[in-house]
Image 1 (cartoon, rainbow, N blue to C red):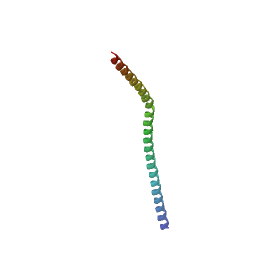
Image 2 (cartoon, rainbow, N blue to C red):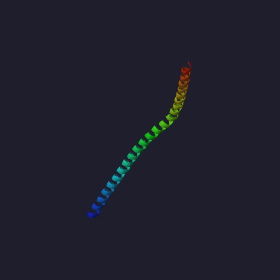
Image 3 (cartoon, rainbow, N blue to C red):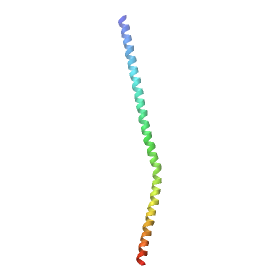
Image 4 (cartoon, rainbow, N blue to C red):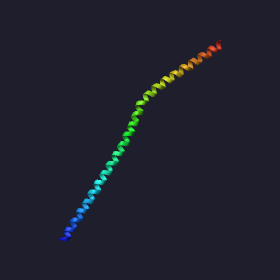
Length: 85
């Protein structure tokens, strides 16, 4: 009878150890998953910010290109004017 009781106690202790190890692994995996999700969300936020700013940059480039064209045209007109004086 004592052997059966010892076997049951050992089995219960082993089961508790297994449960504790499994539970610990689940918690650790969950924390790692949450960490990775936070990092991915930060990258997505950064990308979204970039995507929102690109049209503004493109519009500014358009304006600058027009201004450069205007300045080049004015320069050419001035050079023609100087030659004719």
